[in-house]
Image (cartoon, rainbow, N blue to C red; front, side, top):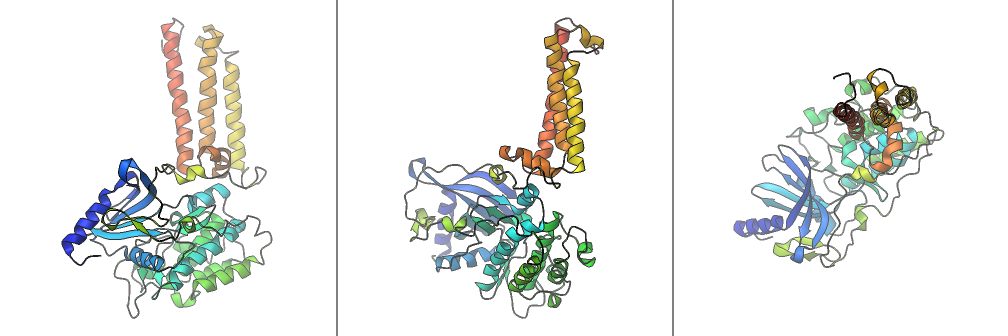
Length: 445
């Protein structure tokens, strides 16, 4: 890059103007994350990519440049995304990187249910990703924000994302100068008790392991109590206690130690390997060819395969929409809970009664013709009580019933339930209005 500040600015300006924003993934005071396409001649597009704009007012994002330099020097990372470009514009840091398809760890656990088997499938690869950050860089890169939403799982493997607050370990520093992170997963030293180091990521990985076997975000009380909850396998409790110790000196000193302790513990857990792990290779980011780079206007990186720009398909509007149905069988007790069974039976009975009311109604609707009564009772009964069942039933059963339609998160469950209820109310109102217009008696007439 040129040392001329004006040339550097014009180069960054040309780079950014070549991208078309497809959608915004996240926007906050200090960072904006977008899905973008690189636009070439004749409206040809290359992508999708992820572009981050990190405010220059906060000392964040330095890890992206370090990862990009390592990748361009020939390092291959199985569990990190490919970083294509890092530059500054108007004092802000701009990062362009690989768009990693798949679903977050939070969605995966929601779909497949937390269990020791799922932990066996995911946790070793998660540790391997942290090991890449710690051992491929000198000094080590500390992620500092390992949490379910920053881990993407796909058929190609597992990828750790979002290195905005990652930092290099500084020998001799007393504490971090900036305190960021997610309280449920960040260690005490990340909030002023000392400098973060590799053991800080060990703490976060321990909390993620707890999440993988319970589907609950941890808190300080959980660690203080020693992870002695009934759904935490007894063989894992000492591993979790050591990984999440308040004092970093009492923790596993490296992620390799944590990984080895986890594998040894799970070897004693019957049936822990029931869920197959995601394929180890090739990972989603390993699919990017490593051929010599080609560059577009102002040196903007176009590809690593040397291929010409071509029209690209738009990315899915939601990674979770492509998630397959959970492997857990419908006969599993974790699916057919008391809550789910009650929802299906009660709402099903009410729906059935509503449908039958069309043939034996009383009151004003008794004078309506059969067709109008069917139009009144059937949509209301099926939609209203179907929506009620969606809201009432357990998350696991809902995810397994509707995963093929992309309805795999709690937010979509609520949206589907309330959507059906609102639709039933609108139809009910419309049918009553139709009956009134035809001269039939109604309760509001």
